[in-house]
Image 1 (cartoon, rainbow, N blue to C red):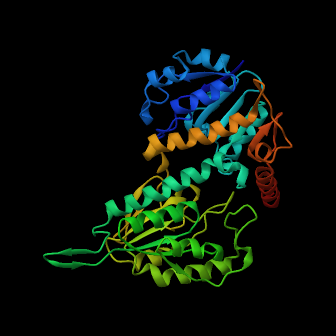
Image 2 (tube, one colour):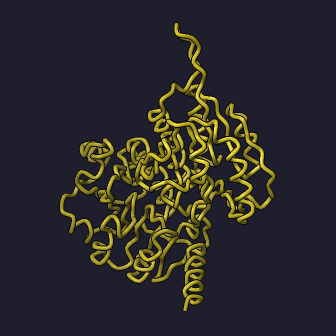
Image 3 (cartoon, rainbow, N blue to C red):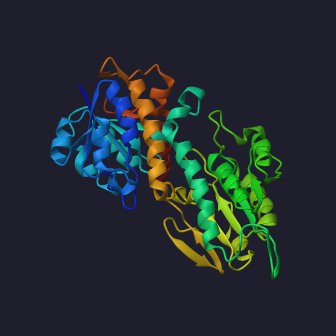
Length: 391
């Protein structure tokens, strides 16, 4: 019988858990044994009794878990930051690990995992196709981040969000600018509108205009090319001239914004720099920037990842843990995504890795002692080329 182990999160500030009690019966039905590390779900608000009632076994002995497990689940598998490199060696040969690896930022960790013959499924790599929607953890977490970013902005702003009629007169609504109208941006728009703010949104992809306007926001137009979106539905990397033009358009609107939420990211690349120091300085004192792209370099020149700073009287949040701050519901979401992937993987009570399956092959990061994901391989080839050019 396949033994699926849910490990306790060890990354600083990580409060989510990979599997919640509601997902346990579905996995047990597939013929697996669920082993939960003691207090794995405590930070997210899930009691051990709930896991046991659902059919899982709580295990306090960490070494026993590592020795017995076949498939290990964790939300945050950033090895060098969360201590996972210390526990890779004790894993049984060819163990399977599923979670977020942030492979483009932590390429050295990925190489180590491949060298240790670990089979890793990176949830960031789930393809954006119809069949994989229920496994798309990256979109689920992005939606949560977009929602929470607006709340962070609202709580930091020295204004009300909605139009208010008071005995002291009418209070005008706050003006919110959302940069990037992907999953996070659209959720940010919807949240800001629900709070009564006046919302503008900017994106390089013309296809999102209708979605933006359907949520009640004004779409900022930009002369763009059809190459602004990849085949996978992600924003594409553009030329330096394009980004300069983009910055000029944003600069026209940022001066009047009370809160700016930046969500622009490029799959496998550094986040594009869209807000310069000069643009920040042009904003009204007391305005707020919430940079969701902070973990991948940030969209704002003055963003400090993981910190909140005051620059020119503007509050800038370098948000890196927004989904974790909503740990109960984001754990539920992640658990459902991972469960859907595992159900596809378990056939007749055995783990089956079908390399002809688009979802499985694309999500697979390392296998058989090699890095098998094509996007990560391209990054490695680029790094080798850069190193060669410096010799």
